[in-house]
Image (tube, rainbow, N blue to C red; front, side, top):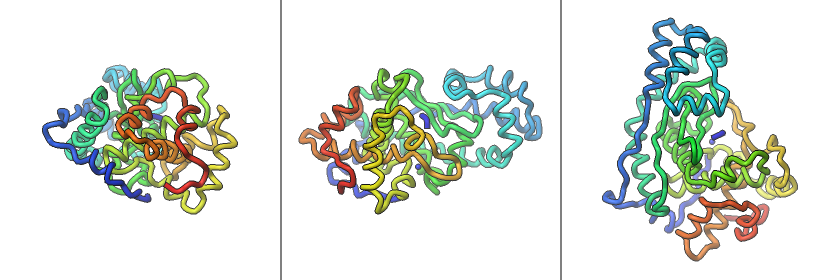
Length: 305
């Protein structure tokens, strides 16, 4: 997690999956915010200038398992947080405002997860841990690590979606899909452009299916009229392990990650060509062989979906 506006038309089949009866919905997903509360107690007590030592000892080391996972996965340390606070204090001041949307986010995620469970009954729905980090990542998730959301990073990345509530809902829905995916492929030491693009694209496709919109929609907006050009270039590089042209190259200020968009289109083509939609959804989530899924998808560069 590693790892945002054109709204694509959703077919009647898509709508049917979103309109879930209330009795089939899971309980509201736990959204854990104790790390954020502890961070801002430290932040306020130090008048917005906590030292690296204090952040490491009283925030990171004393944090939740989710915070420890994020720190390990993304090299979040007291020194790096202190450096980012010094460079961009406004990011941290703004982050507190985003907390206000969480009750409504929880309600909407309950509906989205009801759709996920209806389509994929064995779905895992772990807690979401909201943390404060070093300005990135927006979110990380995986089969073994659960879901962690960087509050300050998600609040600051406005190009994902101008509506903060929508931003939280669609990004967290995307991350929930990563929890369902093949750990063997997700944790591969040197994945190819195709493999990671399909993991991220599948999460985008499934987020749209269960929540109503992709998380990284601005990436899609930037491709209008260039579909064939971009996707032809993707095919030429899809077996490479150099991800720099396609993945994890966006910043707080501007979108990147064209691989998300290409992977989304491949996953969507696979779903649209399938007779059994629920089985196709399961196969997209459980994908272990990216080349095999691509071969069965019916996708080609520049095709209309």
